[in-house]
Amino acid sequence: MANFSSAYALPPLPDYELHPLPSLIPNLPDKILVLILPVIAYWSLSLVFHYIDVNDFFEKYRLHTPAEVLKRNRVSINEVIREVLIQHFVQTLTGWLFTLIEPIDMFGSQEYDIHVWAQRIRMSQRMIPKVLSIVGIDALALSSVLFPSRPMLAGLLAGGYYPNLKTISTVQGHTGVVPAYAAWEMVYAKSIYWVIVPAMQLLLAVLIIDTWQYFLHRAMHMNQYLYRTLHSRHHRLYVPYAFGALYNHPVEGFMLDTVGAGLAYKFAGLTTRQGMVLFTFATLKTVDDHCGYALPWDPLQFLFPNNAPYHDVHHQSWGIKVGF
View: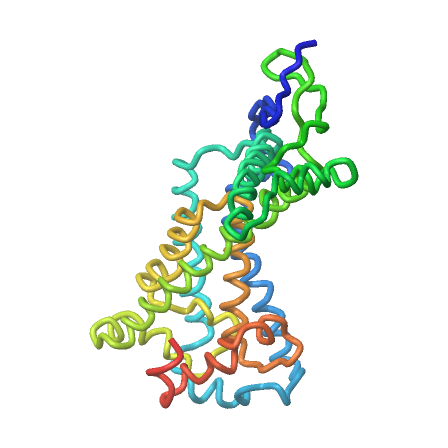
């Protein structure tokens, strides 16, 4: 077997072969599931709150009485349901058309991608001796002293020098002894790949949606034409309830929710399954914001200050210019 190792050589990247990603649910493509999950989430949570309404559960946590719902709102429940169904149809159709140009989800490069991050971690260690020299520490001399008893720490101080870390690997058809990564390097690389990067992507997507909706929502209140033509329809609900969350003018619903979510999905580089998490969470959040209850144990209301009581003020005549 050939010996590929040398003092500071990087472990080689593993070979990989891509395959289509199997669906989470057999016979139901992920790109269809991502479209229907938000709809299921919307009506499921709405029906929970509707059941609470009709059975007068948690009455002390109501923001308004049932009589106010009937007296103050300027739209019938049937019309609300019709408009929401229209918005769900438009967003689902738009998403389906979008899937026609989207590439197929593939898998098989996970180990390769993790090793790329491990390479970056190893290469970043090369800066350690230079950084320590700035404060007068001779990292290489300290490394040589520590090497017999603390080889990992010594290798880190030396800038990623781990001569004892080797493994047998096959790369591009050639099998040999090659440099290897330390266990801690692989733990960090896997954490970055599986947790940190996806979390940062989702955070970026949330920020994009939030920014898009804030400024568009604000414009629809500040511009009289936009308010009268589009957004005033949503404010016929002076007393919001859960399944009225997406009661909007179809144009507003498309611009505010469908386009905003699509932009976040693309710019954040989300996978289809990340899209499932984002769109379902956003749907649950907007339903909860309009639920009409201040529930102390509701995690969405506990974690987010812009919750149902906060948004309820915006639906009142005295709060219509705040709380965007």
